Image: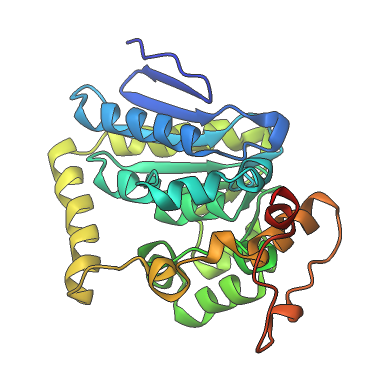
Length: 278
């Protein structure tokens, strides 16, 4: 059972299991919009393939599942470009996939990488796994469903803590919070992931499909409304301001960002890079 070749991911299908691996280990499997589009295409393919019973998402190597959005790509205007068009919605693709999606996490699952983990149906973590959010730390906002869904996984108080404080959490803490289903030593990791896959494959595929749809439909029905694009409503010119530039520049310069200067009646309005180019 073959699969299409991609530039940013590895996609294989064998023995009723589809495996999607972010293949950018040189940047801790950080992604660009192109990476996400390739993942979405692979997820849709696995969803439609009647020979596939389960999907495994992972990152290449042992250091990271994904460190989130590629900061250099974001600094070059990647987020602004996606904000002006239709961004790749990997989270809805995971929910839309008719097969259970298992996040197989080794190393860092930070920011957008952590989003993917908590949107997956199940999560297996190696002992070296580290989880957390990064948005307010680097001035890269997320909104709507992407944020709110975490409350269904770990509860409102812990979700707010994870998002507001941008702390890092060990695999064991994630297990205690309900963010992951199991934690295993690195040397036993692949065998554990395969064990969970085989148990799913031993179950009725139609029943599993109905169950997955039922879980996700419950989330939508409980809210009774569509999530809006809050960034475009609350801060429509955010990516043209100095604030996101401060976050990405501080990250690249390995310093603490100074976001307090934006707590002002007259905060810096234009990113330094924009001023220099005019």
